[in-house]
Every structure is written in C-alpha cells, then in structure tokens.
Amino acid sequence: MQMINLLIRWALLCVCTSLIVSSVTLCATPGRSAAAKDRASFDFPATDVNSSESESAVKYQWNIREKDAPLLGLDHERLRAGFDQALTYPAAEFDFPIFRSLSFDESEGTYLLPVISRSDKSLAFIELGRTTTPNTYRSAEGIELVDKDTLKILKIADGTRYLFVQYPDGEFRCATIKQAAGSNLNLLYNANGLTLHGVSDSSGRSLTFNYGKNGIRSLTQTWMANSEGFTRTWSIGDQNFDDESFKYAHAVGLKSAKFLPANAVVREYTTQMSACDKLLARMFGGPNAVAGANGFEPAGLAAAYPLYRGDIIGDDGKLRRGHLSHAMHLYGSPDGRGDSPLYVPAGFTAHSSEPSPTDAAVLFYYPRLGNLTDITLALFHVADFQITAEGDRVRIGNIGGPGGSSPLYKHSHIEFYKGNTGLPPAAARAALRIDPATVFSAK
Image (cartoon, rainbow, N blue to C red; front, side, top):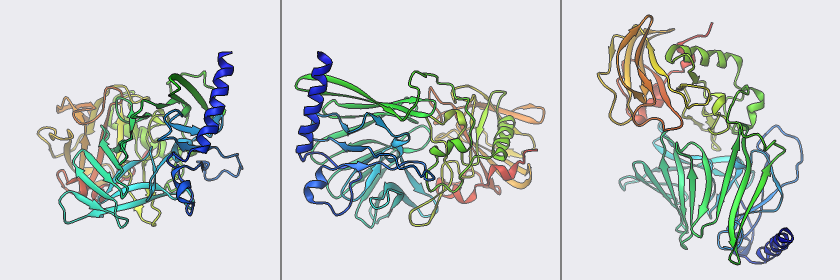
C-alpha cells in the first residue's frame, strides 16, 4: 500500500510540475517563448559521436523553484550511459556543463569557459580577456570573471554567479552556482576534488552520482514533498549495479572512446602510447608505479577521473592545450592511491636546492636527457626531498608533496622544457613543454 501511495504521489507530482512554469531550463532550444525559457525539457545527445543508433531521448529539467519536486526532473526510469558529459546548467547566455573545468589559455592570456552549444549540442568555449580593471576578465557577451587566486567568480547578466575553486590537481571546478533570486546550488566533490559526487540546493534537496568501474552507474535523488521524505534511484544504461568493485583492470583502447570529448585531437590510446607510459613509470617511479602521458590518464582512474586530458579543438577552430598536453602524471599504483618513491635519471648538472614553496616543484638541468639535449626537467608535488644516487637513477623523494595530491590520490606532475629555463612562469610553460614521448623512446 505504501508503494502504491508513493507511485500515485509521484504521478500527481509530475502532472503538477508540468503545469507550473517555474523551473530553469536545461539546454533549451533557441527561439522559444519567455514562458518556455523558464521551464523546458532537453533531449540529451549520445556521447559516442560514432554511434548511429537512434535511442529514445530522455527529458530533463532543473526544478529550481518547485521545491516539492526532485532537484533534477527525469521522465525515464533509465538514463543513457555518459549522460553526465552533457549535463548542463542553463543560463541566458550559455549552458554550462557542470562536469567541465574552467581553464586558462596560457598563450592567449584568456580564461576559457566551456559551454554546450544550443544549436548542435557541441562543446564550445567562451573567451574572457583581461580588462583594464585589475584581476578582471570579460567576454564579448559581457560575462565577467573576477580572479581571486584560487577562487574565480563568474558573473552573468541576470546576476547569477558561478564560483570556481581550485582543487589539488590544479583544475578550477564549479563549486557553487548562486542565483540572483537567492537559490543556491552546491556542487559536491570527493575528498581530492577529482570527482563530482553530487549536487545539493539551498532547500536541502540532493542528487548523488554513484560510480562504478565504467563511470557513473546510477543517480540517486532525495527531496521532500508534503512534509514527507523521498529517495529514488535512476539506473544508467544496462550496467550490472551489483558490481561494487573499485578495481580497474580493464584495458584502455577503443572501448574507452566514450570517455573522449568529441573534439579531442587524439582519438585512441595506442599500444605505442602504452609502451611509452610503462617506460616512464619504470624510469621515474617504484615497482608499482603507473604513468599517464600522451594526453591520457592511466586506465585505473578512468571511472573517477577524466581519461583524456590532452589537446582539444575549440568551437572556434583554435587548439586548446590540456593538463596533460606534453606533460605526465606519475601515480604509485593503478588506482592512484599508492605511494611510490620518485626518481630522475642520472646525468643532470644542476638541480634545485629545495622544492618551491607553492607547488613543491624541483628542477634538474641536463646537457643531454634521453634523445634530446639542453633539457630542464620539472617535477611538481615532490615530498620528502632528497638526492640519493641509486645506479643509473637518483631518488629525489616521494610522490604527492605539498600542494599536490590528497588523502586519496597521490601523484607527481612532470614536465620537460627546452633549454636551461629554471621554473618558468605558469603562463610561459605551455610554449616550452616537450612531449615526453620524444624525450624517451620505448624499445
């Protein structure tokens, strides 16, 4: 009887909310009426751009003002796999994909806000250039960004503010969306800030993303209606939701294409890339270390971390550098949680006396390193700094130093620069980086 009452209540709730024009739109189509702008549905696209299947679309809407409805309105029992990559929060000027990070184009000196196009649902970027006001950036559309170091505040015309916070891996992720009318959305991340765990609003409603080895496996929402609490879970695709394993042993190859953005420059993690990563892991880490270079994170982090972090092509045709474009991450174990000693090759003629105070960076200069000459090696997030020769390698400490990882993920970020550069300013590093695969060749 309780289940029947719940179903009846749910049906009435859906009918009522469809009659009330009181929600914010999710990726609504252009040219709709003013009333439709306040509440409308959106068909989420498939994330695999090569798919030719005509799956039935699922309708979504944010029930911002309708407090008795779940935070995210869904009209199907199951969600399409990869729906998170298209999940956006709508505004008058753009639709913001909440799983995406704000980035900085070092070569142009502009901030790049990822948005989803309302015409073809593709990923695009809004550029915000520096203004005459200190620490302030503005786009051609009038969107303003205030730079407060580890906090970036984005303001749009209707008064809504998006707060982006810097997490341990250096990425700026949206932490709060504050509407001018007073409603707030809080985006909740796990302890290391690498995974969006869920969203809650100022009235206490929440939605939680439940992860499995292939990414998000279900979505759970809680809300109140008529002084009664509700909890409901929507499944993703046809996954086996009894699998609670946090072990990631699956291979990375074409099956991982669903983790690639449609505008990724590199479309496949090849056997040559895998061999290069294994070589780099043996060179810089301990026996269980894994490396992520060539624009890709290790396979073990695929469900909780963006697998592809290399170059992408913006909607304007410009090349955008990713966090791992000509850089690498070193982890102590396949799941990213292990410890590892940190090594560098012997042969350097100069090195840092201690790690830098902000990001624990240590530098080494090599007249020759691997296949190249005149190279500076920079290792960020170095703990327990030391210089101890061990054969053809030199131990310099452990991965995951100050300013680096978190209690869950432990890593060091490694870059190669052409020339005796010292530690370049952050804005200059992209132009100096050398692809790790060109420094060392796997045999």
